[in-house]
Image 1 (cartoon, rainbow, N blue to C red):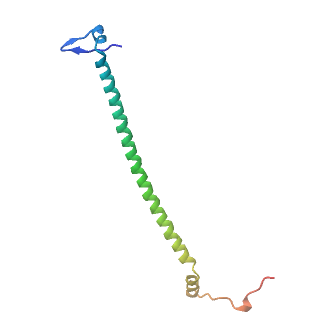
Image 2 (image 1 turned 90 degrees about the vertical axis):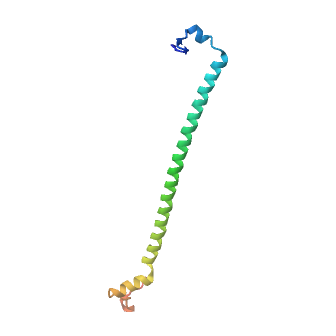
Length: 106
C-alpha cells in the first residue's frame, strides 16, 4: 500500500511511517471507526424519519378510505330503506299488488 504522509513539507519514508507511535495509529483508527459510526447513525436516522413520514401519510389515507366506506354504507342503507322505495314507487305511479293479482306458493 502506498501511503504518502508529510511532516512539515517533507515526505515521510515508509520506515518513518511505520515508526509512528502506536497511540497515533490507534487514534486514527478510532477516529475512522467513530466517523463511520456517526455516518451510519445519521443514515439510519434519516431512513427512520422517511419511513415515519410515509407511515403517517398511509395512515391518513387509510382514515380517509374508512370514512368514505362509512359514508357509502350510510348511503346504501338510505337507498335501500323501505320508506324511500315506497316514495319512489308512488312517484312513478306504481302500487302494491291487489290480493287477486298474487299467487301463493304451495
